[in-house]
Image 1 (tube, rainbow, N blue to C red):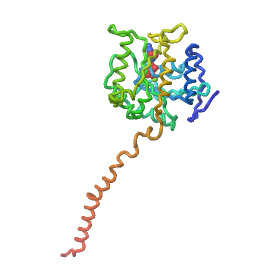
Image 2 (image 1 turned 90 degrees about the vertical axis):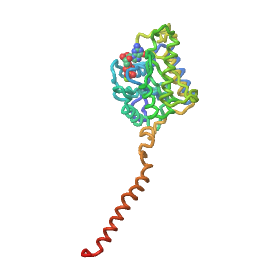
Image 3 (image 1 turned 30 degrees about the vertical axis):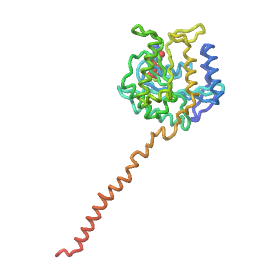
Image 4 (image 1 turned 45 degrees about the horizontal axis):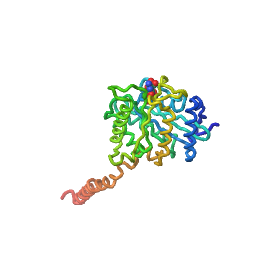
Length: 310
Ligand code: GDP
Ligand code: MG
């Protein structure tokens, strides 16, 4: 079965799901069933983060095929790409995007590109889940991370964090400094979540309201597998079904998805910016420009009307 999306591009049948080991397939189909039971028959996932963190690899892992370009070197995704797959009346859209950091700064241009892409392909529809991707094997968060979060918040609104989950790639690692894997994972995710709360302006009392889940991912072909041939984390968890499970939870968490409307694409009051100053400017012109000119003309007329030989 083939379908057409609103934008007119072909939605392929999700055949690659059959590439997964049968244990994974069963779990994925069960999750799609859960969504359909809740009358959710489309899931649109936006993937964002810095460059080189594993966004494109994660998209490919979830779809089960090489749908988007992966590169060991920066910026091989110059534009956002949407991968759409359908399965038994259910459509999965995943939007892969370029890294949000360029030359050491957050790129507002990349954010604009993402927004105009959404406007073109998803107008009046929703983004149901944001995957905020970073690496597990990073040992610090810095101000740039906070700036990335702030830029996302400024572009999409604070509410986007209600529909966000953090994805940490490179999850098959040996922690440094005699830390256990669990300790390392909880330290890394806590510091990243704290950074997100700071960047998004989520206060202490709203931590529960904006509870953000963290999922682990290992995209490498060398990822350990279990007896069912599923890729597993050091904990033994098969991570693909686990990731899709968390995505499902976020999609069904009762908070509205991010509506792609004109306001989102053009920014809040893009056309109104500065409009409040118009009356002030008019008043200023009246009292300081028009009035003096009138006065000056009047004086001139008076002067003119008196005889030149006076
Ligand atoms: P993007 O720029 O965020 O889209 O990152 P890519 O998906 O293109 O990945 C950048 C590089 O990291 C590529 O060489 C990938 O093969 C590698 N990579 C991505 N995810 C993982 C992972 O989970 N584990 C390992 N070992 N390598 C990864
Ligand atoms: Mg990429």
